[in-house]
Every structure is written in C-alpha cells, then in structure tokens.
Image (tube, rainbow over all chains, first blue to last red):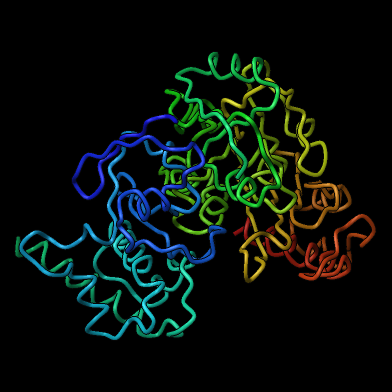
Length: 162
Length: 266
C-alpha cells in the first residue's frame, strides 16, 4: 500500500493507504475527523467540501493520494486556538442556518471559500450563485444565505481588528 | 472502485511512457469525471496516471493573436484570468459556468477536451473558435479533433499539452443548463473572425459537438440574429431524453444561437 503525507488542520500526517481511498474516507476513517460528511457521493451535494491549499474541494471526488503534500483544512480546523467558533460557524448558529446539520460543515467550508474569493460584502444573489455546489434539504437556504452574509461581514470586521 | 496502481509522473515524457507500458491506463488531472465514473464502476483502469503535478502543463498566455492554455489549467483559472477576460471574454464566461465553484477548482481544460462529453462546454468553444489542440505528438485542428460521442482523434498514448484559441473580436456563448446537473442541455458558441463565422452546438447532438453550417452561411451575409430568424435545425440526429426531446433541443439551438449572436455583437 502506498504511503501518503499531508498536513491536516496544521498537523502533519502520514499513512499507508489503498490507492482507492478517497480523501473524505481518509479524513473520516483514518483521522477520525468526522465533521466532513458524505452526502451524495457523486460530487453534487457539497457535504464533503474541505479546503485543499486554501481552495474548496469536494473530498468525495478526490483520492487521498492526489493531495500528497497539501495543506488540508476541515471544519474541525476552523476555529482559532483561543476561540470556540470561527465567525462563519458563529453566524450559522446565530442565524439558524441549519436544521439537521448534515450539509452544514460543507456549507461553512464553501462559505469561507466564497469570502476568500469574493470578499466580505456578499449580496444574496452572489451567495446563492456561489452555493451551486451545496445542497440542503431542510432549510430552503433562506437562513443559510443570511448566515453567510453575516459571517462574511464578521470575517471582515475581524480582519480589521486584528 | 476496482483496484488500481497510482502513478505520479514528473514529465509528459514519463506519462507517455506509462501509457505505453500499461495498456489499461487512464490519465488523471482534475478527476471530476473519471473518479465519479470509477466510483460507479463504469470505468476500472488498472493504472491511474496523475499528470496534475507535471510542471509547465498549466498556465495561460497571450501569444500573438492566440490565447494558449495549458492542459492542466483549472476552469477557475480560465474564468478569472485577466488575459482571457480581456481578449476572449466569452471563453472566461464559459469556464465560469462549468459545474460549481469547487468543481472549477479541480476540472481542467485538457480533461474536458479529451473526454468530449456530449454535454461539455469546452468542445463548443474549441469548435466555435477554431482552436488547435496541441498534443505530445502533433497539432490537431478542432474541426478534425472531435470524432463522436466521447471520441476524439487522440491516440492511446497521446497527451494533450495545450489548447490554442485564436482571438475573435465577436464571440459569445449561451448555455441552457439542466437545472439539476448544470450540464448544457444545449450550449451554443458563436464567433466571427473576418469573413469566418462559426456556430458550434453542444448538449444536443447524438454524436457530440457539431457546427451548424446553415446558420454559419446565413450569418456570413450579415452577422445579425435577424438573419437566423425562421432558420431551424432538424430534430433528426439530436438526442432526446427525459431532460428534453430532440424537438425541444432543436428549438433551443435556434433560440440560443440568436441570443449568442446578439451578445457577440453587443
């Protein structure tokens, strides 16, 4: 079995894996980071979204071997060491942006990617377009969009304060 | 997925060598078509050759009157490229419509063109602009490259290295997206370069991407959507499925071609 090495949430990891191991399997089963979810397993729903070298990626459609040497951030790695929640996570809680919570880690990882690409001031139309790759069955998206707009603003404010 | 051996060559030459050595091998770049296919067990190559790490295979350049895009350039890079946005905005627009943001971080132009999915966008751009596909062996004109459903002129050990798009002052893409998959139910790419007019259609053909010569001839007289009024494509030879009948697709081709020409003229 080939070896794979990467950094996950700041920690270096190495393991021997069957080449067929998907990144989502590696994270959930080898590393026990179960915040990343398998929803559709066909690249559509976004429940599996993580960040690879700072960019949103569908981990159910990525082999662990493909991200050799990369920097991975999962939902577990978002909050700063001295804070319980990342501003985007806090916004989802404050704005009731989740019900069952299954799509939520993927929504949050995608949301942060949207902010990274489109800035801190996001209108509804932009958010809805950029969430094309994330599906939610519970909420009807309304509060997700509100949460993301607020989370983006909070990230912006945090940046200026820092 | 069925088991396979994973390779990560450092050069195109090494990759070609691996293709020659292993008959049952497939190239892997973005993987967002191949891996889902393998997960469904519709493909089971014994060897996966990951070319995403090969240096020099990605990048966007303006060379004379052409934009040259490396084969492993991601859709997001094309969509956001200042060079493409300035000189061939229709191409940046097309790239930005593929899949979704996460998919666009991974999918590559080389993969899209080599796969020739009948509902993919890039084949329409290639045919619609008269692109040249550069491989590890030769250069192939788009008109000769796309051979049929998921079929191209590529030989088994041939790797696309770049795609060259000649600039066109008037060019546009109109895509009618399947609401669920966001693939093109019908997509039409039009361009005018001097006297040359091209109208390329994806999503509709039962044999893959094709040009509509009747529309091209009409537009050569005058490049205006008005000259397309009353013209239609026969439903014969178009695909029909639960997403849309052949007649519906034929109708959409006319609508989108007129919209694309109007957009190209603007």
